[in-house]
Image 1: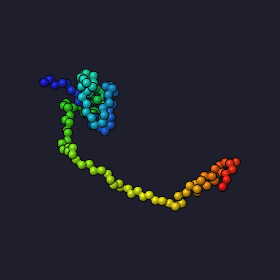
Image 2: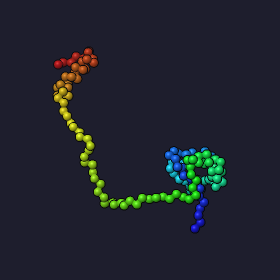
Image 3: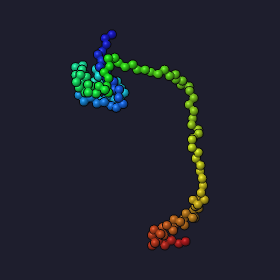
Length: 129
């Protein structure tokens, strides 16, 4: 099997790194293969020039040029599709519903109060009590 050429860059900083001569931004803590023809159209000469005197060289304290592809580690976590997921029946907060006597109004009291407010707003209205 023929191995394809690769040029791996790994961003080891917690910030996105911009490579101006390649017009490319590498996300924080990510690795990319710049010779992958499905995603990039760089030549090996362009990448080597950038690594020797371009933006890869200038940001070499934040970027690492890799010779091999990084290994992807998948955690071996067992998954049981029949696992019981508890419902959240209880809350941390207790909600109290309190009734205040001074806030309870009958329909008649509300109508009288509304009429008084209407009389104050517009004194020309003559409301019978």
